[in-house]
Image 1 (cartoon, rainbow, N blue to C red):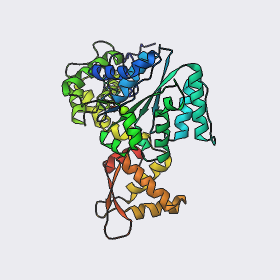
Image 2: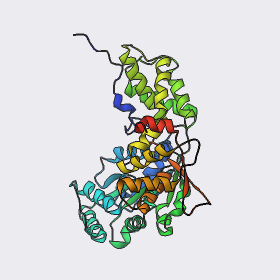
Image 3: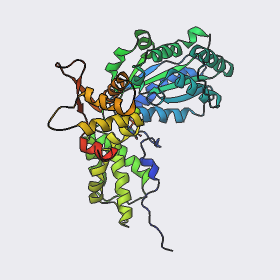
Image 4: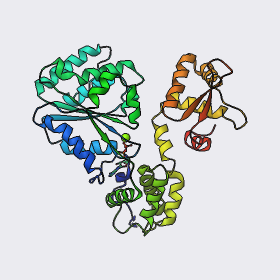
Length: 369
Ligand SMILES: Nc1ncnc2c1ncn2[C@@H]1O[C@H](COP(=O)(O)OP(=O)(O)O)[C@@H](O)[C@H]1O
Ligand SMILES: [Mg+2]
């Protein structure tokens, strides 16, 4: 049988949620994070902190990288929660409980206060200090009860003596913290850790490191890394663009039965990989949100404005929920930066919907109109 030549050592190393062996250029931030956690290793109260900076500056990655290093300490329990996915107070509490007890917890219909009291008892009995990273914490801003939950978590040590929880908030835009309840804000932002955008050179070294994990030696032709770094830099400095371009280029080269990845492969791969940001965004939408986006897309036309009223009316007719429901769904799409909603002064509440991503790209990903 013919031996199938492969270029990849580990294709998964290019996945966005892969935690790399090295995390260059973030030594300062990782050290600052470690400092906030350090007291907990001695059973003392950790500091809370807020990590902020633009997309793709390594916030999520560096926290997970540090958490992996801390996994050997039994006095603390690092817990990572993405608030976009786990977005209700009940879900957050249940996740924390399950991670600590190693049982799947589904306490629905149980008063939140009761779950909270139980959580405190468990961590006191086990003598463990949870260090909870709340990624994309701005997703909680839309719900008042979430802020209440945060406030409780932050005040743990006042509720039960010698019982501590450390919180790490992660947010893209520090400006959004002004929307937090002031009580939450002052306690959460004890320390603030800034993640500046990477320079072109930094992006290049990050790619170089990752490539060692992902490909077999000698697979990349000269110029490949420089070009992918350039692409990522130009596309909002989004490193995921570089990883996805390289992964796709590898797949193309393997299909061509080539032993190396050329600049040409990279150029071809980039044409698709450049939309990775939109793709990952759409991947996270639920069916109803996608349906709404499809309806907007269907009504979208270069000749006339698309109004929220028309889109909502179509959704109500087809799916029979209240206009109010779809209005808030529309606001969620706005929050996700998929659409802009512009005031129309003519008619009541109606807004003009402007797509923030090119319609043809949306169509490619969502399927035809
Ligand atoms: N300094 C770094 N070293 C290695 N990989 C990095 C670094 N910074 C970012 N990455 C990688 O780039 C991608 C985007 O980073 P991420 O941590 O998700 O950014 P953020 O959470 O700030 O949006 C991830 O795949 C991450 O592993
Ligand atoms: Mg992130």
